[in-house]
Image: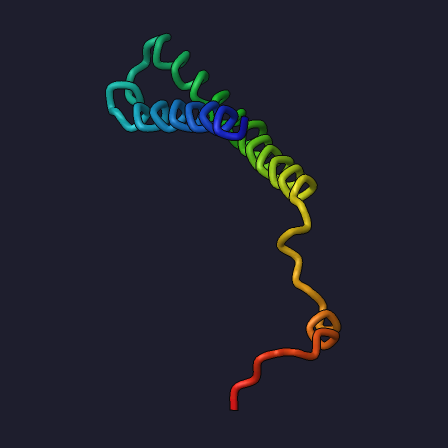
Length: 95
């Protein structure tokens, strides 16, 4: 599930980045045509969506995934207490 949502976010970020790269072209930036204005408007909207919608949603989805991962993790990786080792009494010692 996490890879599917990340693929969507990557695709969205790549789209906005490609729109940004195209704005470097002097043909688009110096043009007075209606198409140039529409392109600039689409780019501005996409940039705002990227900063204020896609970025925070990506962060929240990663946090949610991590919280689920931690909640479902079993306790098998916990460390044993020191009293468990002392109770045995038959520990190997190196001199």
